[in-house]
Length: 139
Image (cartoon, rainbow, N blue to C red; front, side):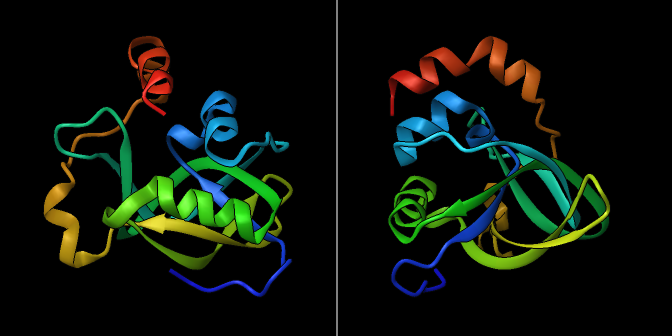
Protein backbone atom coordinates (compact mmCIF):
# COMPACT_ATOMS: atom_id res chain seq x y z
CA UNK A 1 0.00 0.00 0.00
CA UNK A 2 1.26 3.53 -0.70
CA UNK A 3 2.59 5.32 2.32
CA UNK A 4 1.09 8.71 3.11
CA UNK A 5 2.87 11.53 4.85
CA UNK A 6 1.61 12.10 8.37
CA UNK A 7 -1.45 14.38 8.36
CA UNK A 8 -1.68 14.42 4.55
CA UNK A 9 -5.18 14.38 3.09
CA UNK A 10 -6.06 12.33 0.03
CA UNK A 11 -9.02 11.61 -2.18
CA UNK A 12 -10.33 8.09 -2.60
CA UNK A 13 -12.52 6.62 -5.34
CA UNK A 14 -14.96 3.98 -4.11
CA UNK A 15 -16.93 1.71 -6.40
CA UNK A 16 -18.58 -0.81 -4.07
CA UNK A 17 -19.53 -1.26 -0.44
CA UNK A 18 -17.74 1.91 0.72
CA UNK A 19 -20.15 3.99 -1.35
CA UNK A 20 -22.74 3.34 1.37
CA UNK A 21 -22.63 5.78 4.31
CA UNK A 22 -23.25 3.00 6.84
CA UNK A 23 -20.21 1.04 5.62
CA UNK A 24 -17.95 4.10 5.28
CA UNK A 25 -18.83 5.23 8.80
CA UNK A 26 -18.18 1.81 10.34
CA UNK A 27 -14.85 1.52 8.53
CA UNK A 28 -13.46 5.05 8.97
CA UNK A 29 -15.56 6.51 11.79
CA UNK A 30 -16.69 9.32 9.48
CA UNK A 31 -19.03 10.16 6.64
CA UNK A 32 -17.71 12.18 3.73
CA UNK A 33 -19.58 14.19 1.11
CA UNK A 34 -20.04 11.87 -1.87
CA UNK A 35 -19.32 13.07 -5.41
CA UNK A 36 -20.13 11.00 -8.48
CA UNK A 37 -16.99 10.15 -10.45
CA UNK A 38 -15.82 7.86 -13.22
CA UNK A 39 -12.74 5.68 -13.43
CA UNK A 40 -11.50 4.89 -16.94
CA UNK A 41 -9.82 1.63 -18.00
CA UNK A 42 -11.03 -0.41 -15.03
CA UNK A 43 -13.95 -2.87 -14.97
CA UNK A 44 -15.99 -3.80 -11.88
CA UNK A 45 -16.90 -7.43 -11.26
CA UNK A 46 -18.10 -9.52 -8.33
CA UNK A 47 -15.47 -11.23 -6.23
CA UNK A 48 -16.06 -14.98 -6.55
CA UNK A 49 -18.30 -16.24 -3.74
CA UNK A 50 -18.88 -12.75 -2.31
CA UNK A 51 -21.57 -10.06 -2.67
CA UNK A 52 -19.02 -7.24 -3.15
CA UNK A 53 -16.98 -6.11 -6.15
CA UNK A 54 -13.42 -5.60 -7.21
CA UNK A 55 -11.99 -3.69 -10.12
CA UNK A 56 -9.42 -4.94 -12.58
CA UNK A 57 -7.47 -3.12 -15.24
CA UNK A 58 -9.32 -3.45 -18.54
CA UNK A 59 -8.56 -0.92 -21.30
CA UNK A 60 -11.70 0.80 -22.56
CA UNK A 61 -13.81 -0.12 -19.53
CA UNK A 62 -15.59 2.51 -17.44
CA UNK A 63 -16.53 2.22 -13.76
CA UNK A 64 -18.95 4.64 -12.16
CA UNK A 65 -18.42 5.28 -8.48
CA UNK A 66 -18.03 7.84 -5.74
CA UNK A 67 -15.20 10.24 -4.98
CA UNK A 68 -14.55 11.15 -1.37
CA UNK A 69 -12.17 14.03 -0.70
CA UNK A 70 -9.96 14.78 2.26
CA UNK A 71 -9.34 11.46 4.00
CA UNK A 72 -6.54 11.47 6.52
CA UNK A 73 -3.72 9.01 7.11
CA UNK A 74 -5.58 7.18 9.89
CA UNK A 75 -8.76 6.84 7.82
CA UNK A 76 -6.77 5.46 4.89
CA UNK A 77 -5.09 2.99 7.23
CA UNK A 78 -8.55 1.81 8.38
CA UNK A 79 -9.62 1.47 4.74
CA UNK A 80 -6.47 -0.55 3.97
CA UNK A 81 -7.36 -2.90 6.83
CA UNK A 82 -10.94 -3.19 5.58
CA UNK A 83 -9.90 -3.93 1.99
CA UNK A 84 -7.45 -6.62 3.08
CA UNK A 85 -4.89 -8.54 1.08
CA UNK A 86 -6.96 -9.06 -2.09
CA UNK A 87 -6.64 -5.41 -3.07
CA UNK A 88 -3.71 -3.10 -3.73
CA UNK A 89 -4.13 0.64 -3.22
CA UNK A 90 -2.71 2.75 -6.01
CA UNK A 91 -2.81 6.38 -7.08
CA UNK A 92 -4.95 7.08 -10.13
CA UNK A 93 -7.06 9.84 -11.66
CA UNK A 94 -10.85 9.95 -11.83
CA UNK A 95 -13.17 12.09 -13.86
CA UNK A 96 -15.46 14.26 -11.72
CA UNK A 97 -18.90 15.36 -12.88
CA UNK A 98 -17.74 18.81 -13.98
CA UNK A 99 -15.13 17.25 -16.24
CA UNK A 100 -12.17 17.82 -13.96
CA UNK A 101 -9.52 15.14 -13.48
CA UNK A 102 -8.94 14.47 -9.78
CA UNK A 103 -6.08 12.43 -8.30
CA UNK A 104 -7.48 9.67 -6.10
CA UNK A 105 -6.46 6.49 -4.35
CA UNK A 106 -8.16 3.38 -5.74
CA UNK A 107 -8.26 -0.23 -4.58
CA UNK A 108 -7.61 -2.67 -7.42
CA UNK A 109 -7.04 -6.39 -7.72
CA UNK A 110 -3.63 -6.86 -9.37
CA UNK A 111 -3.14 -9.40 -12.18
CA UNK A 112 -1.58 -11.93 -9.77
CA UNK A 113 -4.86 -12.17 -7.80
CA UNK A 114 -7.43 -11.77 -10.58
CA UNK A 115 -8.37 -15.45 -10.36
CA UNK A 116 -10.44 -14.40 -7.31
CA UNK A 117 -12.58 -12.11 -9.47
CA UNK A 118 -15.52 -13.33 -11.55
CA UNK A 119 -16.56 -11.72 -14.80
CA UNK A 120 -20.06 -11.11 -13.43
CA UNK A 121 -21.11 -7.47 -13.13
CA UNK A 122 -21.81 -6.10 -9.64
CA UNK A 123 -25.15 -4.40 -9.07
CA UNK A 124 -25.14 -1.69 -6.38
CA UNK A 125 -28.93 -1.65 -5.96
CA UNK A 126 -29.11 -5.42 -5.66
CA UNK A 127 -26.38 -5.34 -2.99
CA UNK A 128 -28.30 -2.65 -1.09
CA UNK A 129 -31.55 -4.61 -1.17
CA UNK A 130 -30.21 -8.10 -0.52
CA UNK A 131 -26.96 -7.77 1.43
CA UNK A 132 -26.30 -4.34 2.94
CA UNK A 133 -28.00 -4.81 6.32
CA UNK A 134 -26.35 -8.15 7.07
CA UNK A 135 -23.03 -6.95 5.62
CA UNK A 136 -23.00 -4.00 8.05
CA UNK A 137 -23.60 -6.34 10.98
CA UNK A 138 -20.35 -8.15 10.16
CA UNK A 139 -18.22 -4.99 10.35
